[in-house]
Image (cartoon, rainbow, N blue to C red):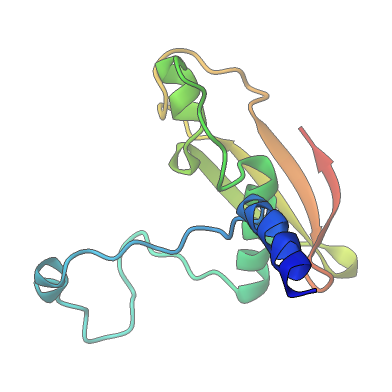
Amino acid sequence: MKRSLLWVLCALLPACAFFRRPPRPVYAPPQEAAAVTFPVEPLELKGSVTVSGNLLAAVELAMEDFLPWDLRVPTGATPREVCLAKRETYDVIAAPGDGGLVFVQIWVRPGACEGPMAVDLGAYYAIDVVQRRIVAARR
């Protein structure tokens, strides 16, 4: 009995490799962190943006669908393909809508990648934040 249970566990253990968790954020070394001085006052810096929790949740969900965290750029990808596979290449706008929806639009930031860009490289989402689901999407 114990031996058969051991075989079952050994057979199932490699399957856990398919259920990868999202990566945790990387922290800088303590020496670099010690050199940072936080503002004393609340953040009111030029260019800062306040984002509500609902808008942030909607943007996270839309971006995860549009450009998943575990997306791998194929070997031999062109510089343009590498550029388009980076989240920092895109700009996002989010706005609350009727019925508890949040609308999220994602598009390539002008000048982010070299060369001309197609206008339709992006997506438009209707997100239900309460149920954490995508109601509709246009690509």
